[in-house]
Image 1: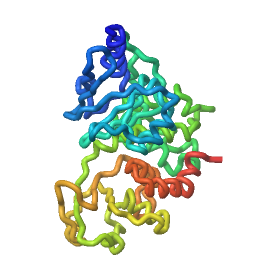
Image 2: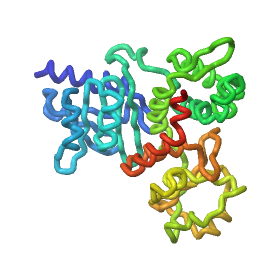
Image 3: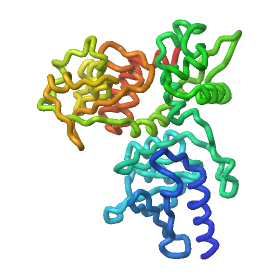
Length: 348
């Protein structure tokens, strides 16, 4: 029995904690794995004051776990540990709110003050060599910012030699709001991972669908860090009468999706993006600040991203909708992808 205990103790407290991609709100020391029976059959994980019952699941049981949902243990949270989940399985588990980790560092945790979702990692288990932990910046915050600037550049395909992808690293860093060193590292990784090729001195963006999919997972880790001001309105339809022209305020999320899909989605939460102080706008439309809840969220947009009319770029709208985890929002996101993003992500 002790051998069984030692294996799982090494797996959980060295292997998974070593490989897991941590965010600014979660560190390796925040995770505590403890055996409750002393022989390695029953394990609990504690994180941020919450306790999970740990289940070791065979990979061929992933469809069954997805179909059956969370295990019922009297309201206790459950954490599924897999050898490795595919990106598709990870997305399905997240969509069904089934929290999990695997030995490669893929993870989904949905805590009150922490939302962490990473998929697509295929790192081999490192229990003794911490040098094997990835230091990649590609889909961390700096990479998410830079890739967003590149993908939302109107000249990406219209002007290949003069687009932002082919601008200087200093310019890319400035627009993205990241350091010059980070911009250099990320551009190197884009080439190393086969997303950027160079021909006759001109850079081209390829394998965009894969890049887009992995960018979304990085966005899920970046999005919870934004400073959100929560507001409450007196009428759910107030936004229809708001005039955003010449205000530097733009619709995002469900509101932008409603506009882009011509009313397919009726917004329950109104999202406003602006870098300005908009006290007069808030006062004019009868919005009031609240500490929790509220049906209006106000935040600064990420750097770059050409807006479309009164709305932020469709890529940000799509990401916000998928991030919400709402099935109706996902349907709207698919329409936005087909009508606005497919020509960017899957060019002819």
